Length: 171
Ligand SMILES: [Zn+2]
Image (cartoon, rainbow, N blue to C red; front, side, top):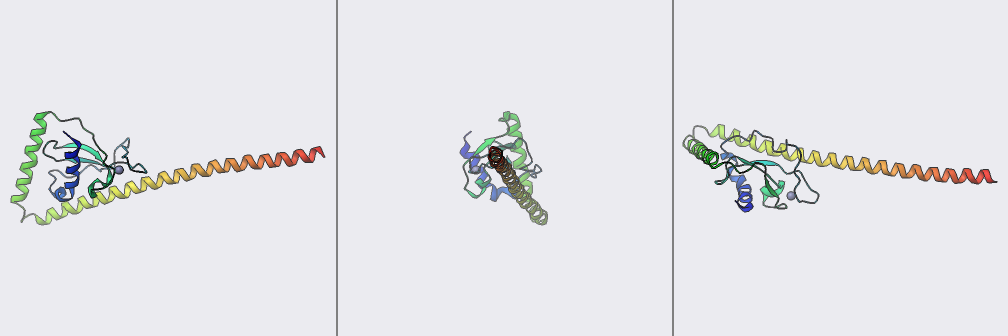
């Protein structure tokens, strides 16, 4: 199994999103410890569920921008390869689910659009979460810098004060 098929699955996501056989119940950003992609700055990679032919139901991490066909190309499996039996079973269930959806499509078009909306919502929420995490990291960095400079200023002040005091005593 090569990464190229995993990333092409990622690129196909936009079209296949509404057809995922199970809802994306997992929040793609709610996992620990974070896996960082190769972008500059490095970012927490969302975790998705693959529904590709070779790896149905297998979770993987991918660069946040892979969906738009951009990003650093980072992709990594979370789950070990599934035993063939499970892989075939999940593939069979996926195909059955797609077949049932297709046959009952007109009756359930409203429900489908609801599913699509919730997927869009969860992607939007994941993006907002990631931005919040980035902001928090920036805040922490600013706080660290501030503390560092406050120390430097204090040491300089102590030095100047010491020199002045020393001079005054010597006179
Ligand atoms: Zn990246």
